[in-house]
Length: 83
View 1 (cartoon, rainbow, N blue to C red):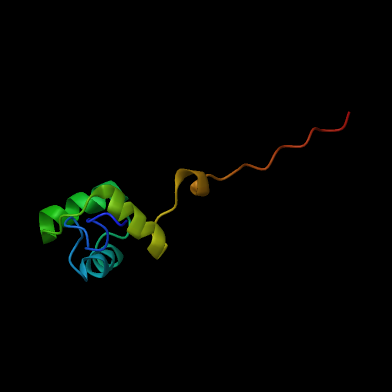
View 2: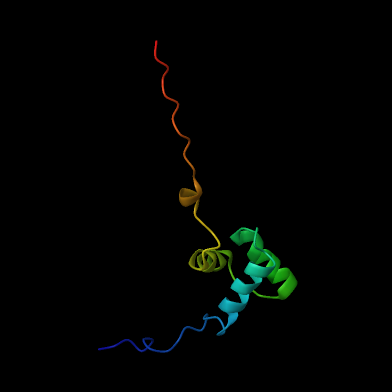
């Protein structure tokens, strides 16, 4: 027996093309912005209402954002001097 809600698309699903438009805006106008600031700027200036976590996922998929773990750089250890 299959549940009656299985099959139809979500009512919260975004319009087709919103993702491409938002990622293109980030590439052109907000290339140095993080996901939170990019989502806020898109909402205020271009009326694109998308959550910051959604924008973060899109930026990761597009290669525009790295997590803190991936951005962390390690310093080369200083070797001890010989006595």
